[in-house]
View 1 (cartoon, rainbow, N blue to C red):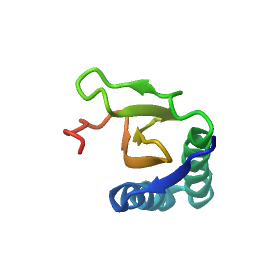
View 2: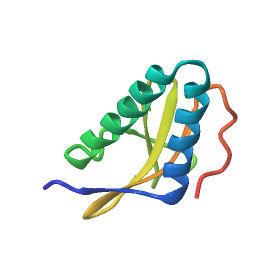
View 3: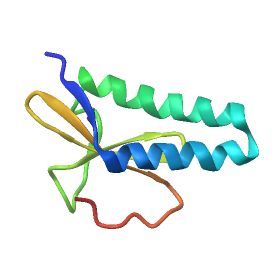
Length: 95
C-alpha cells in the first residue's frame, strides 16, 4: 500500500534554505539538489521502512541524499518528512 508523503513546515523550510544557499553559487545546481532530495522522499511512499532507524529515537528514520540527511517518521497511512540537515552540521534533537 502506498503511503502519502507529508512535508512538515520545518522540512519545507529546510529544503528552501538548502536551495537558496546553493543558488547563490550555482543556480542550476540548486534545483538539481532540491529535486534529488524530493526524489529520495518519493520512494518512501512505497518503501517507508527503507531508511535506517535511529538508535536514540527508534520511531524516527533517516535516508541520505548526497550530503543531506532526511529525517522522517513512517506512520500507518503516511510518511512525515520532519527535517533535512547537511551531513557536516551538528544535528540537534529532532521532534
